[in-house]
Each structure stands twice: as C-alpha cells, then as structure tokens.
Length: 79
Image 1 (cartoon, rainbow, N blue to C red):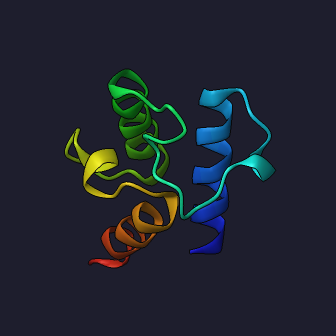
Image 2: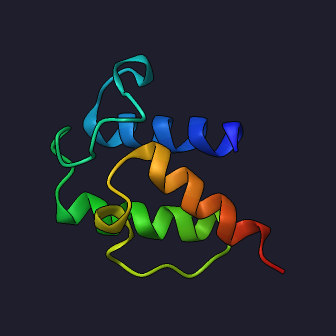
C-alpha cells in the first residue's frame, strides 16, 4: 500500500509539475487543480501500472490519494 501511495503521489505531482512533498494524500485532487483531462489520463496510467480496468470516474469517486490508494489496493488484492 505504501508503494502504491508513493507512486500515486509522484504521478499526481508530475501532472501538476510540483514536488511530491507538496502533495498531501488527504487533500482532494480537485483542490490541486486536477481537471477531468488529467483524471482521465491518470486512470489510464493506473490501469497500465496495475493491470486493472477502472471506471473513468475513479478520481472523482475517490477524491484523495489516500482514498484512491485504499481502493486500488483492494482491487489488486482481489483474486
């Protein structure tokens, strides 16, 4: 879970051109200015990284990195 959280933090930071240390896992992605285009791209990056299929609304359904990492961890753990 920690690796996934760190990966997501770095991913979001790269989209926003920020240092990962500036990204809090408990702040909504929308607060950082992550728009629908980046949310869609992020969904594709997550699918590629984890080899899972996601709904394109996943970034809005799980609004923070913490919530998203928890959700993705549960998907990856499923048989």
